[in-house]
Amino acid sequence: MLNQQVLQMLWPALWETLYMVAGSVFFGHLFGIPLGVLVVVTSPGHILPNRLVHRVAGVIVNIGRSIPFIILMVAIIPFTRWVVGTSIGTTAAIVPLSVAAVPYVARLVETALHEVDMGVIEAAQSMGATPWQVIYKVLLPESLPSLVLGVTITTISLVSYSAMAGAIGAGGLGDLAIRFGYQRFRGDVMLYTVVVLVVLVQVIQMLGNFIARRVDHRHPQS
Image (tube, rainbow, N blue to C red; front, side):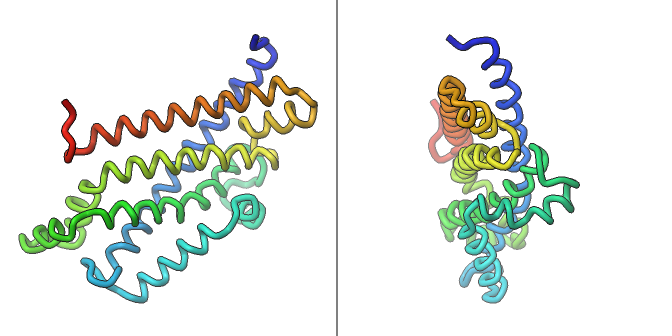
């Protein structure tokens, strides 16, 4: 049975994890979506071809994705302190989580936008649509189901990253599992933490799949 002491520790840790993940999902997509769009529209043969911009944006994405999160988290401690005034705690953890999410989101957005039929884009251009209108009214709406699934994948990855951030005092379920489970030899705390993380990931995945089906106009819901 789940005793009262463990429950009192689990609830605050869960809310800390949700807070970190929600903040990093927001900021990760705030910067990641424009970066992903930039990579796509500046590629050769697209609506705003620019070889230099395309290569620079691609390099930024590749470098960001190649750095392991635990190294990134430590490497940008000065930047984290500059942004939030501290490098410890749940709010501070949002900074490296967001930085890690940006290139990840950008690559998923790039993949989603490349699925849009060029014929649809060319039809919009032939009717006088500006590049911004093509992006806003064609590219993003047409790729919306894939974008929603991308948000789902990113969110689940950030749940894992947030647990890793707990190793250096970021709080959340990861911190609970390490400090009260592993270091104090509390197998029950470890078990319940894993169960909560599994349930959280399943809920996120089901919600993402549901929303993706609802916004997919290519397969109308019965």
